[in-house]
Image (cartoon, rainbow, N blue to C red; front, side, top):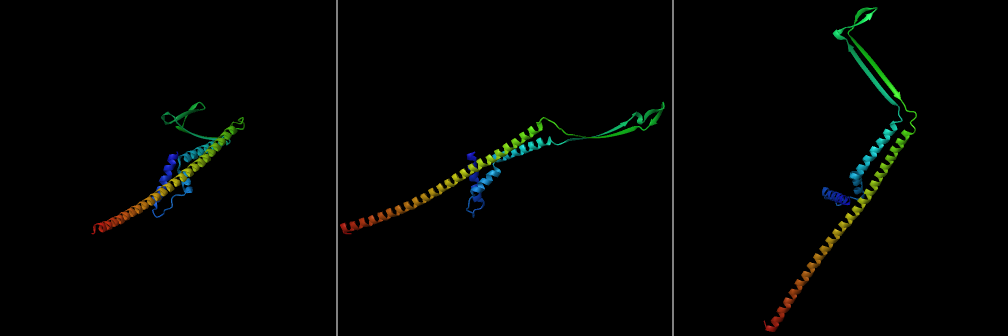
Length: 203
């Protein structure tokens, strides 16, 4: 987890520098924390669990609502041969060959006594929601702490790199100065030796 956060911070820091070469200011600590809280997987998963718990509370509350059932039926009957016969006073009488039947039903019901079952389910759903919300808050706090720690570590590392580069540059300058002095010393010694030779040998 920590390696992933360090990689995320490094990539974001480098992305800001590459996207705006003229802007030397890197991502701030608050920007890094806000970005992690929006895009990190642990926060997204905890948020989905809160949404599921909220749905559970809605389902538990629905048990207190009246139950309404609506039904509609349609029946069409046609006798063989297209005609249907019935008896009127013992005499067969031909009537129409089809019959239609419509029936609508609306039933409403409400449970008055359930021995506290609905309340227990609702309390359980609300407790689950509270637990999910607390877990989301804890995830955000822990993630903010880890991002802040990694951010400060990254800043310290960059400062260490900058200091090391400055020390290298100073060492190079010192080396160049020493080489220049050595070269100047050799030149002076050579001139002194040549002068001594001339005086000694009579050149």
